[in-house]
Image 1 (cartoon, rainbow, N blue to C red):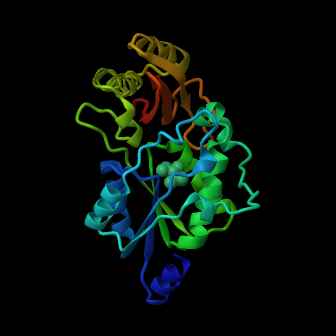
Image 2 (tube, protein in one colour; image 1 turned 90 degrees about the vertical axis):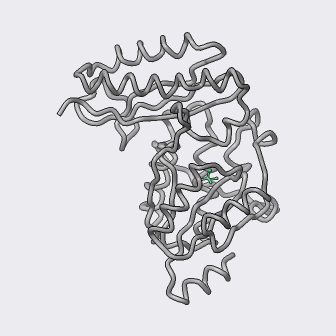
Amino acid sequence: MAAHADLVRSQGKTLVFVPTMGFLHEGHISLMEIGLAHGNHLVVSIFVNPAQFGPTEDLDAYPRDMERDLALCKKAGAAAVYTPDASSMYGPGFETRVIQESLPNHLCGLSRPRLFSGVTTVVTKLFNTVKPHVAVFGEKDFQQLAVLKRMTLDLDFDIKIVSGPTVREQDGLAKSSRNSYLSATQRKNATALYQCLEETGKKVAKGQLDTQGLLQEAKEKIAAVPEAAIDYINIVDPNSLVDVARVEKPALMAMAVFVGKTRLIDNMMLYPPG
Ligand code: PAF
């Protein structure tokens, strides 16, 4: 991969990179399309990264379909797909992790303590091997995007980070590889996450700005959904990810909810009137 990247760069091309964990869906494809608007040589990686899963999480169950993924990458215009295996990514004696001070100590980082150091570590390694000019990440993983933008600045990667909006099913459910775990009933019930974000967005636009009340109403709505268990629902400053008391300026509402055993995340910006 590194030799391929050197060759592409020596030809004066702009290398754009979409890192993924595979089981690709329209969300990933839209990131590839956005990537191709920023460069002319698209590289996709497919790697289910063990370093970002906790011991009780779904690493082994994580859905995989390499053949279908490769066909989708080709169709989307990828020039190369990088598919390292875990033993080459983390060889014998591997012991380094890239750790951030505060952005991981919010939202998903609280219930998944190894997630963001696993992500920053693998993305550092991917950046060093794929050597992209531009890298594209989805806004559905808003905290991941914030963490990786900060890391790129802090560690002096000469890479432009571009983000792509969340792609949704017709009923609003955010596309996710993990949606494949849901039964038909759970799948229907899972639309409550989006509905809840939408409803809160409307309340804020009408001038209900106190986050305590907004969050209480949101939690009541989600708690009423069969098989749903709230991991977190917060309204935060989109830069620091710290909770805000009032939505005086645009704020991010973010949530993680278990529907059955499946942990789903979603988020939306809230805009106060004017
Ligand atoms: O968003 C993902 O799919 C993963 O967290 C990433 C960025 C590919 C790192 O493993």
